[in-house]
Amino acid sequence: MPEFKWRDCNIAKTKAKNLQNRFVHAYFDIVYNPTYDFATARLISYRKLLQTCISKLRLSDNDRVLCVGLGTGNEIVYLLEQNKHVDIVGVDFSKNALKKSHEKASALHKGIELMVMDVHSLEFSDNSFDKVICLHVMDFLDDITKTTYEIIRVLKEGGEFLITYPSQIESQRLGLNILRDSINHKLSMGTNRIRAFLESISQLSAGIIYLPLMLRSRKIVTREELTRLISELSSNFNIEEYPAYCDYIVYGSKST
Image (tube, rainbow, N blue to C red; front, side):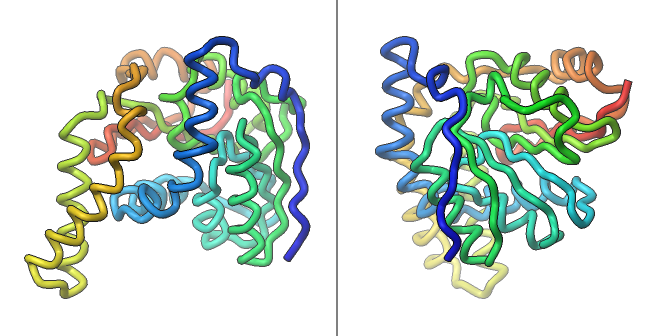
């Protein structure tokens, strides 16, 4: 297994500025990241969203791909399924999460570059990457606009970006969507109705560990706000709503 290598970039900036941020950082390291792969990552709704997002990118050999807010690295698998010859760089504020990303890449015999970094201020030169993706990160950030600008800044001219933004407040609707998708998937695999329902309920109940996140103030953006924001940065983009996961998928290429 390749050695876990990472760079501690602007870690001073990632230190919590107030009590709430300290709680969030501690929660991610102690609860969220260690359990993510056993809870959220197993949900069929999550896997379908990930597959849908990665399929929007046209990956070519030797593309340098930046994953902003890589977390435990589930997108690595989907990226390499589409093209195993891309070079992946991942940044996140949590070293513990990046260790899990390293393990996933190593299991696929792939070396990746990992950095602890504040995604509000990416420490890369302009025009550094062929592709940039940012999945399920924006609703945890203080400044969505700043991070979006940073993503486009480090992207090469003509390079592709893919970003998800929260479209709705996470509520019982999201839970019902996830439950429905899980049951339908199990039924399609031949599981009987009662077992499919009970297994899905059991799987969904694991989400109780995320209750503190559900109680947070989630930043919501409208399609009109997103259109204005992205239009300042690119003239070639698409916005698709993914209602099952209460998200917008925004993708396109860097152009003026």
